[in-house]
Image (cartoon, rainbow, N blue to C red; front, side, top):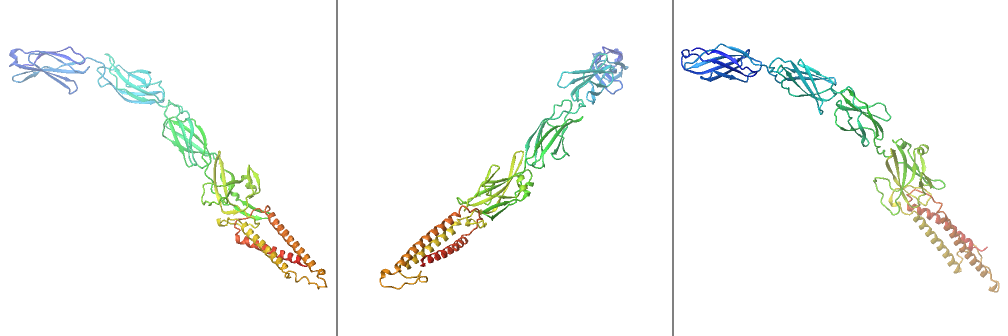
Length: 560
């Protein structure tokens, strides 16, 4: 069987072609024709397209071809015996078309106002590429830029710093523009200018060792904030400590720790972008003062000169306490009502009786606790006798109007006594009245004097010269008893006795007056005068008074 003859190509487009052939004569067919097959091959590739038709078809249309591509085609006839020889190949080219989409390979920001874009030619050029066009759209705006080029790269200029741009590219042939590539996004570089200083730099927290700071990022649209640098130093120092914070947020909060208490600190913070650090913003603050150390127990000394005193002797090193402001002395009367003295207390009790500033302590460390003076509006009163006092020493510091204090309680209690002998004591059992011993001694003295006087009076009335036998001689009777001098002597004796009694009573009153007059002159003593000692002293004085009174009575009863 012969091959198909007179194969022709017609109606060529960019994607299709019509192929036509002539059927062989009957004598040349060999048998009945079953089908025709047309094979289309892409030149220089292994791509083939094969189509079969029924015997009565002499024309076939082949589509889905590539634009501007070279093909060759052959036609083969098949009968009952098999396929005959193929026709001679016929070559043709599809027509041109617009190019296919491209691929952007790389986008590189150049400085802060330009971007370099590199792209590949379209896979399906469909003809000769005459031009490329890049479309650039600024993010969040309607601003667009179009750039044409004859090569597969382009530089887009006159952009804004640190702005995102959406870029796409397309190619053109003689037929027209092809499809655009997929959109790619790139950001231009940061501005060459550094960012502004942070805003609203404030202090939000303070304690004895920590200061909390807060700030807001600067209004910086031409770059990115990469972090902050915080520098600080103490008021009395010049060298700075530097802390770098690489994180960034609109609101930043940091705590600067391990600071010294009661100190001024100066801070400055800077924002950093790709161009470097911007200007700083400054802030100052201080840490809270710590509670001062507990002071050393002062010396409280009791002594007697013209009157009794309690003196306070301080240790001058208390003024070395940081931010020393003053020292205060409290006196707490624990006598009335009798109260239990607490061992541990949160703050001093009682009343402030003495205030000393730094100048006072530097000039003098010894102070009188009851000199009845007024200093800095505080009255230093005389303390009440027969009362027991507890004293507190308080040290006060002041920094930025913040007051801190610590105190110590004197380990001893002091009782203000009537006696002029200073004795210290701290026992609650000895807080009773020291007048008790004096009163008992005084009563016993009166009893002894009255007993002696009654004995002498009784002896005189009985006519026995118990009290006068050693000093008088009974006269002899001469006749009439009327002329006897005894009654006269007796009257004289009675008169003398009465005078002696009056004299004794007056003397006792005088003694009592003297004792009473001593009360206002008594000042301060220490507390621990025990009652037995007081009674012994009073008893000793009363014995001397009794001996004196007996001598007076005897002299009054003796006739002159």
